[in-house]
Length: 494
Image 1 (spheres, rainbow, N blue to C red):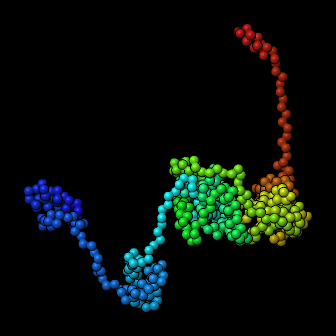
Image 2 (image 1 turned 180 degrees about the horizontal axis):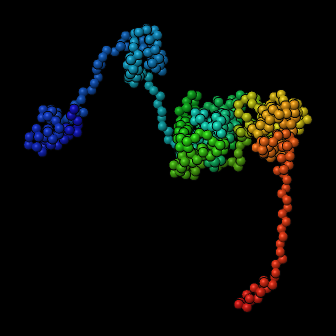
Image 3 (image 1 turned 135 degrees about the vertical axis):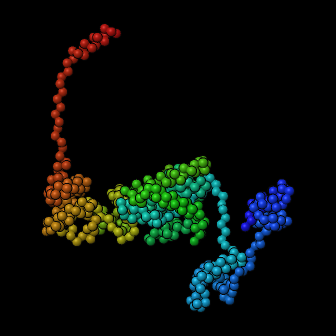
C-alpha cells in the first residue's frame, strides 16, 4: 500500500531524475503506480473514495418504523432495551450478534434526525463574586477508624474563580452541618464572596424541620454574612458544576493519596482530618495566583459567627435522668430530674443549659434511636440500687472501656452473686477517683493475675495516689575565706 510519504518523495525526485522509473524506484513503488499519482497530482489520502454504501442487508428494515415510533415517544430508550423487547415479542427473529448493528443504527439516527441534546454553556467567573458548596458522600473510599468503617460526608466549599476549596467532616445533610461547614469555610478564608450557590438543599431539611423553617434559618445565616443566596433548579446538578467537578477531583486526589499511603485505616478522626487537610493544601497550592486576586476583593466578615445551632426549649428531664433529643436518648446528671432544660444542638455536640448556664456538653449521636448514657450522671443512685444494673436498658453504655468489661466478666465468672454490686462499686471509684486511674488499676491486676474485686481495685488506686517520700537534702556550709582571697587578688590586678 502506497503512503502519502512515498508519494511526496516521488514528487521530490521526479524533478531531479531524468527518467521517471528512477524516481519511482527511489520512492519505493512501480513506474506504473508512480505515473498514476503524477498524473493525478494528489496524495493517496486525497484519492480515497468515502465508503457510504452498505456491505450487507440491514436486518432491522422491517421493524425500523416501529423502532422510530418507540424512540419518538421515549427518546431515552437504549438499543439493548429495544433489542430485548423484540426478542421477547418475536423469539428467534434476531441473533445476539445483531445487537451492535441496532445500536449503531440508533446512534446514527440520533445524530442525524433525533432531538437536540442539552447544551452546556461555559460561564465567565469573576474574582470574589461567587462561591459554591454541597455535601458529598465518602463511603465509596472505604475509610476506617481503628478498623471500623467510617461512614461520613464532606461539606465541600469552593470559590468558583480560583477553585480554592476547603471541607468539613460531617455525618448527615442537616442545617446544623450546613451552617457549621459554611462558617468554617468563611472564617478559614477570612472573607466572603458576594453570592453563594447551593442545590435545592431538600435533603438538608431534618425530619422535624419544615422547609419553611429551613429556608428562614438559611436566609438568616446568609443575611448575617451579607451574602446573596442562589439555588440551582431541581434535578440540575450541572448548574452547580463547579462544586460537582471539585467533588470528583478531590475524591480522586484522596483515592490516589490512600494508594500511596498503602492503608485506608486511621488511628482517629483527627488523624484522618489532618490527612484530608494536607491534600486540600496541596490542591490549593497550585491556585495561589488567582486566589490572591480573590482575596483583594472579598467582603469583610462580621464580628462573630452566626449561632449555628438548633434550640429545643422546655425539655423535661425524666425519672431515668434522660432526655429525648431528636429521637435519641441522652443522660444528664440526676440533680436535674424533674427540671426543664434547654438543648442547643450543634453539628457534632449538644449543649445542655439550665438557668442561663451551661451544665453539660454531650457528643451528638448520629442517626435515630441511639442512646448515650454517662455513668457519672447516675452512679450516685446506681450504687444504692446495684440490683438495677442486671437488666438496665442501657447496660452496655456503662462499660467505659474494654477493661471495665473485662472486670465485669471476671466478676460474673468468679463472684456471680456479687458481680453487679462489685462492678457498680468499681464504676463509683471511676466516677470519684478518675476513670483513667481506675482503668490502670484494673489493667495492673489483670497483668499480675490478681482478683478483680472492688477492694483490690480501690487498694491499687490508693497505691497510685500515694505521695513519694520526702527526699532529705543536706547542704554543707561553704568556706567564705576562699572567696575573700579571690576578691583581694582581683583588686590587686585591677
